[in-house]
Length: 115
Image (cartoon, rainbow, N blue to C red; front, side):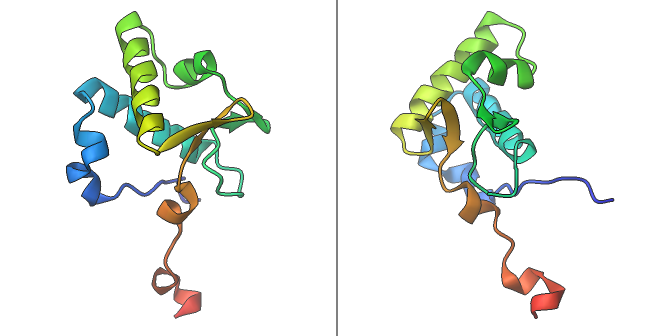
């Protein structure tokens, strides 16, 4: 059985939204993207959830194995910054990664049955 995966685009290396984050905040961002992939339910919403319910900040921190106050602060500041930059939003108590579906979509050319 193949392992679950999430796409990571190389252009992110030079993305102004990301390069203005601290290294710790970038680590929190990549962790959050992996969590979004793990929370995927097939709707491709980018919603950070479990059992259909959005995770709160404490649950997100637990899921990312954040143990220190410093790392927790990096997570929180990253969320604030990426929300302002249009990459995250809170909706009905759930954190959502904006454009998750289009970033994770498998191009038709990559599907043998579609070629």
